Image 1 (cartoon, rainbow, N blue to C red):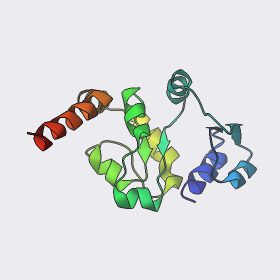
Image 2: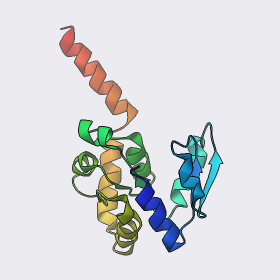
Image 3: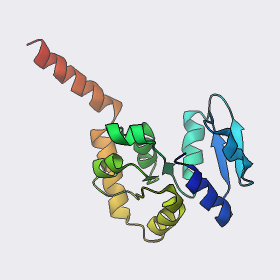
Image 4: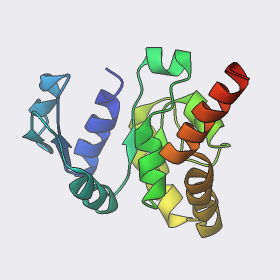
Length: 155
């Protein structure tokens, strides 16, 4: 399980973790620092924004399949749009965001690289990422892309 090293490191550091939504690996609840809040539904949009903003760091943990196919999850776009720069173990995600987000293949490093990122925060980098998401990666952008495709397809 990709997330286990991060959870164990957070436990050693005394960092508490609250899990909202579906839990793929119930065994992780054996660590004393982990609390499973809800098994269904997760948090609504407003709650999600507040949870993200109040978190120490913003992990995005991907399994091999997602990394191999180059999947870029909406979680990264959402977190960046909230001003919360996520860390990831996905090389495709790192490259998509122009090597501007914290990255480690090993999730055990997530707390450390996130804390270092925040200690040495480059506000201009954060603004760049937020602007990139705002101007290039919204639902409106996707709809415009689809409409352009249809224009080409049917002209």
